[in-house]
Length: 320
Image 1 (cartoon, rainbow, N blue to C red):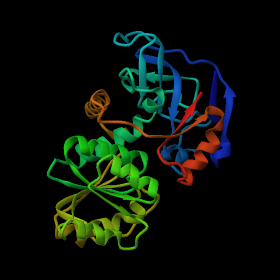
Image 2: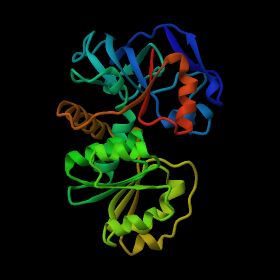
Image 3: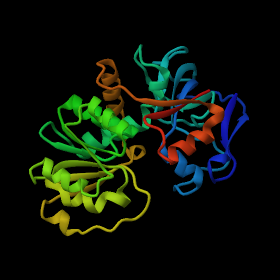
Image 4: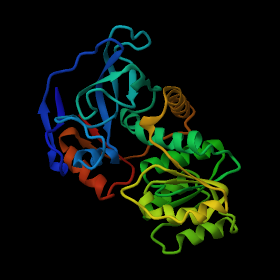
């Protein structure tokens, strides 16, 4: 089979397609014939060598894919060859024509959900749900601020929030993103390119501030986030590209909290709840991943370039 292999850390060009041996499922494992692959920002950090811990070289990137079960190992009773599934992790890497997964990394996909949309679920929708409901414990009375609402995690968060009745203020960086936020029910939409956009957040809440902030770029925004929190407000850090300086006094007055979030640190029970919620949302049509571009597996390097320069709206998926 063909797979993307990384022989050394570096720029996108280290993503090279190679012929490799088909994996075989062992006990408790599932072999998935991949029909679509979702790429995520964290995979660009891992590839560059700036993410810890680093995988052993060589490796095949990726956790998110969708396809059909090709074979199951001993002990797997609830999946069979031909079942349509999406993955939320792999043993051998998702950027390949086939991927080997542990049983708990594979989830049945409702009929009618395309493989491309299934490949867009794992990291973005898991991160949005865990941040919003398991870490911030958002409830319908809350007001939510989603930074970068036109990104894949932001879109997922808006969809979950709308389904639960949580009012959303969305920040976007382009007109296409504004249309996307409107489509998914953001109550207010502001441009984070405006120098006074955080003051706009206060104005939109009559000076009270917001209850929950989902922060995708904490090294840029966290210090300002703390100045617009309502009493008891929570900031969930989903992404950061470096250190940041904050004023702890901004946390003291509202008795606010900064919460970290990493999906891969979630306990097994929480992960089961996340994927039950994702499947339910697909079935009742409250969740709808946005696919920005489809590219071939051989174009993985170009897909990483697009992701790093933020030139794609919606999820980029690779098609083997």
